[in-house]
Amino acid sequence: MSIDAEINHAARGLSKTLIAIRRDIHQHPELGFQERRTSQKIVEILKSVGLDRVQGGVAKTGVVGLLQGARSTGKRALHTVALRADMDALPITEANQVPYKSQIPGVMHACGHDGHVALCLGAAMILKKIQARIPGAVKFIFQPAEELIDGGGARAMVRAGALRDPDVEAIFGMHVGPKTSYGAIATSAGPIMAAADVFTITVHGKGGHGAQPQNCADPILIAHQVYGGIQGIERNLAGPDVRVISVCSLHAGTAFNIIPDTAEMKGTVRTYDVRVQAEIIRRMRAVLKGISVTHGVRCDLVYQKGHPALCNDARLVEIVRASGRALKFPVGAKAPMMGAEDFSLYIQKVPGVFMDLGVQKNPAQSTYLHNSRFDFDDRILSAGAAMMARCALLFLEQGGLGR
Image (cartoon, rainbow, N blue to C red; front, side, top):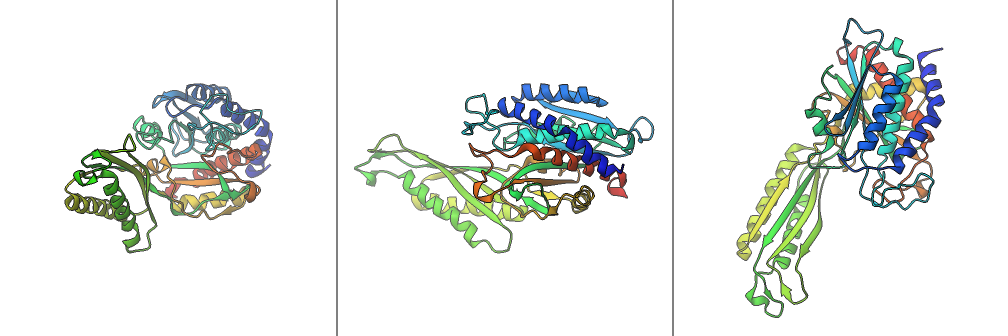
């Protein structure tokens, strides 16, 4: 039996197991850095599979497993590749009426991370079956807190040494894709997800009676001018680089007849190019300075850079395409999007590729990520596991990126 046939055969045999794992995790969702039950379950499964090393409690609730191929040279593999899955849920109340509905009020796996855990565990099971044919080592990284932009899980895992001992040369990640046709893989070289920054603007005006605005410096009125000025930045930037500036929150006041002292705005900036990002920050400060001088008030800006843009390595994209051909899975292009992923923090350290596993069957009936009705046909998990396993194996078969 060829290695590709063996991988597909093993994956099909694991289908019911992976569905059961995913549904168990779905019923018991946990928020970022609280994934204790999920982490314990992953450790138990990896140990039962027989990995060479399993470590829990990495970056609080993360897990790292290592499978040493039998064709490695000496005590350590010549090459090591990593597969990554995120495992945290979202603060959403599930609206689905399914047997595996979340049992935790206000918490739900609405982004597919339960599926990511299951398919990555499946990849470990598949590769264990063909351990004698693996010319290197495979590291399995189960990451907490992907949904936290401030101090999230990828940064914590990198700091905790998840990419070391042995040193990882490349990393693959997979996400269920409700906009990608069921069973297809989607990825592209270069930037596919944006940098995600957060800003807070506080307008310090002068409050007073609602019937006497002439005695006040109305921060709500000023905040609206700030809003218009910020939206004008995006409109007037030159060049083809995609960018989004969104003010998503505006809070001020306590009563119908009191002009407040302050107004607070919060929003996000999404970019692909660090030069565009820097220009937006510069112009935001200029807008606030001009409005502050005009009204004689103070406008404070707190700008927090979040995850960087996610840029896929072209050489690893070719490995994904070759793996798809070997397993007879269609691999198409992934259009860039303005959402963010902290997988980008891994690929600041080592080359990486992020891909979508298509779960869309009927576009008219699709539910999207971060939605209370998000769900997918989890029979696709075995295909995702096979694809991740084949990508890791092909990378090692080709001798890493130094071939």
